[in-house]
Length: 446
Image (cartoon, rainbow, N blue to C red; front, side, top):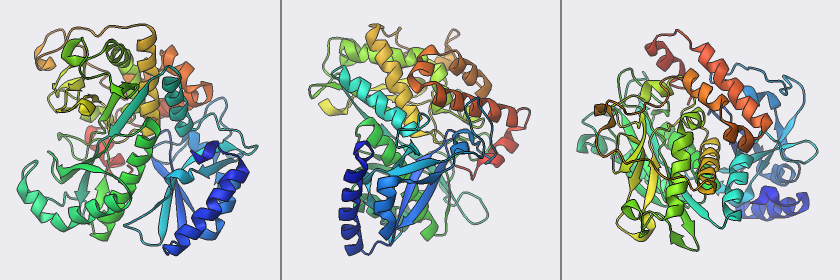
């Protein structure tokens, strides 16, 4: 990743990129990052300034460490309010011309202090550290995040009719989906599936798995592209956890598989459903930490209007093979490389870097403790009297997060305190608000 290179190396890489992009008629580059509320923020530079930006970064306000979903701010002991400055440094390894925005390219960015040291509150940096910790143990993780969204017309009503997964919806938006497929493919992404989803106006796309940081980057790029293609078709997009009261919401299901020396440890092992012991320990570690991890993977008040039983959201802390009501759904796949675990309780409001970094940290803790998986839940957990519900509100998830020594240690004090402060502030912001008002308040924020 170019952000780990020296300033001189980044500048040299940027000069080569400028020549290449100029030949493709690119005029500017947009840098994206995701804050602790799950909102994607951007800055851009003219192409001629890419070298300067790669070498020295561009300014970013430190107060966005503690920004809320409504663009207000909270505080922590280390937050500086309006004081200070950070530097956004683009990762030129992911520099991508945007097929749906002619003349523009995109790159994810890391946050640095003005002295060139990594900012401790950088979420992408956290995901990278977690990935490196996995690699030091001799393992690799492949990850992917499903992207679900609702398309709406200019009035804000769902812009697709017909039943869930229905042919009608697909045909009504055939040209739109074709352009999206072409744009994603032109940007070097391998699309696995693109289809109508269950809720009104809802679609889903999934792409090929990658390393954890790369998968989070790709999630940002996919969402950026969906929004751009939608705008070209006169459509509005919402990634909010719930679009309308009482309906199935937008999931952000995280898929992970643990590998060692090119072997998928979720396939052809001696354990249940082909799990190798290491995969079982890894998944058990995540399952044990799942209530606290919800503060990263289901970060908003509206997340808990989605995370309810009987809506395929994974509202119970349990696991099973192909159980879509379990928080951890084991997927055997039809080939060696396809076996993976899906965490269904996470939604599209999550910062993908926090989400994957937290899961890796919890999985490693399970590996270190040789933690066994609990008994499998082979039926709908809602029908079981003793099934454990995951937190049912942002406040409950935040309480679990605050008690997690593992996540405090893994995130580091600055990032941990910022996430905690944002979650507490948003829980207070929406406290006592009717569900319909919560949904309306955030529908177009994500």
